[in-house]
Length: 439
Image (cartoon, rainbow, N blue to C red; front, side, top):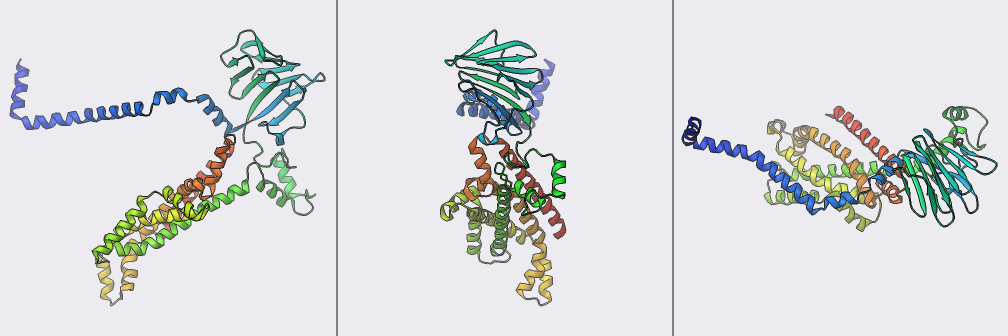
């Protein structure tokens, strides 16, 4: 009772202070409630529960695996008895004979070692799957469907026409009514250095080095080094040459767009600065022009210029030029308005003409901002040019979209993403080095 009375007395004496304190205590709770309410609204509005229910995480895992591993197919056709061994099931990557982990005996029976104790045998139309932690599973194909004897583990599925087992991510077998297909995965990018049909395919690095430095010539018309470089550069599966040229296009797109924006933005910034342009209407018009140019994202500008100029790097260059002219013009004009006029007055006192006042009184003060902002946008535009290129402006972005459209070449997708990240790293290091040299 005493404590309650004291509290009432304090509330009455310091009402304003206590009220402010309560409001400060309520704000964090109110913000948490608002955040929770927004998340609840977003969950319901976007039907997140249904999206999660429809998501296929297993497929996502398989696609991710395909980006850093490849699989070798062993396929037996029960109708004609033919057996094929190939990389990724492609016709142009078929082996002449079985790989070392597959045994094909005189009776045309297959014994496939999948590693880690997993093994598959195929005899006639009978496929037997051996697992270290499960009794052998026998699947029989009869032309009408597939029958399986015995219990089925959770990593296998059976229907009337198909038996599929995937005990581990890198091992898979699929039995159909007229065929059986076995996949064994290996870490790496298949045929990365030389395509499957190249005479250099499968040669070790030491052999290649020895071949490059010594005779005889593989191709009498050119040295072995040139022949090896040509085989790598024109690898049709990885298109190293085309990817390199696309990367150069992307860098050029970013460089030209940024350079043009800086060159046009600087003089416009002088006209938009209050301390150099006394005409308010002119300054207002230029500032609204800057707002208009940077108010539209470079992606939208690229779509506009693609309609105007067609597909190609020119549309990307123009998109970056327009957007960055607005941004750099605004930044430069603010830097010009914040210069120290004493330096300008000092140059003016020597009898310098207006151009000389700009050259020796203004430029040295805004040069660090000009260089640092231009280099920053050059680095940033390297990333933007990739996205703009994906819309049709060309460059590495277009190559990236092409690999995504196929839905199969995820290793090529990872390859292009890796190269793009390396280029961004290189641009960051280069711009940092140049900034330290110039400022």
